[in-house]
Length: 76
Image (cartoon, rainbow, N blue to C red; front, side, top):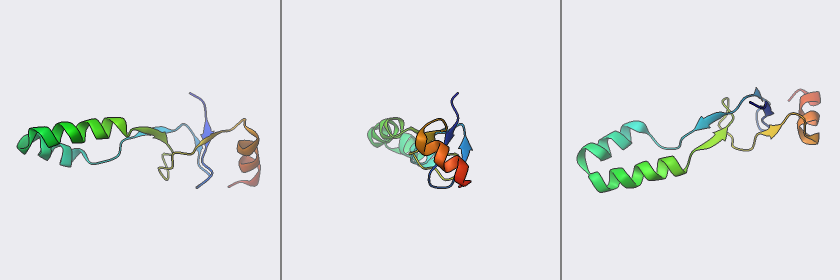
């Protein structure tokens, strides 16, 4: 997996998959209200993104890009 750098917090490494929302809310909606549970589950699956493990930002950039090299040399 390609290593990336976060321009927000300076973390460099592999991104992680981040899913918006809450599993416990999803579970409660499924247990008590079937239709809202389905809608919430679909929304959570559609809102997944690869982001910074440190701050959660979605705008990580490759280390070998010009901006990535600049951030790495600045030590941010």
